[in-house]
Length: 129
Image 1 (spheres, rainbow, N blue to C red):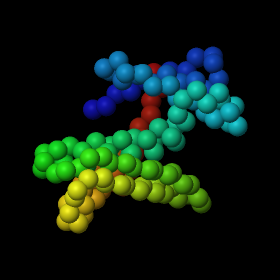
Image 2 (cartoon, rainbow, N blue to C red):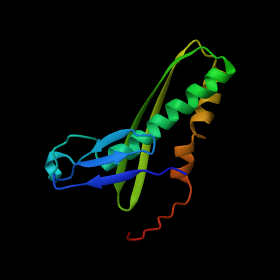
Image 3 (spheres, rainbow, N blue to C red):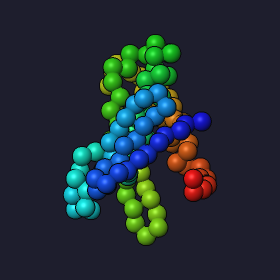
Image 4 (tube, one colour):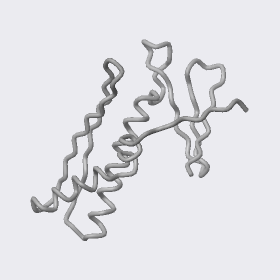
């Protein structure tokens, strides 16, 4: 289970996000939405999660296989139109990899935990504390 605490005070749209291990990220809204752009917007955080998970998952797999993967770069765009959300993910594998290894790394990227979460049914249960 993942448990994140999000808190906002009186500073407009500045949100402090804390993990149980003590990590802190600042979320905010862009200036054109009334925020101060001091941190990632909620949608940027969502897209960032997919990019981070993709990179980490591919890196772990390549390391286990001892493949010559030098780096993984992932660009993620989040597009919304008419009730449809689309993530456009572009991945670059750098290293002396065979075509077969690149194909396998793409399959691994498509199996990263965030990809699975975002492509399966999601439910949100909300209570007031």
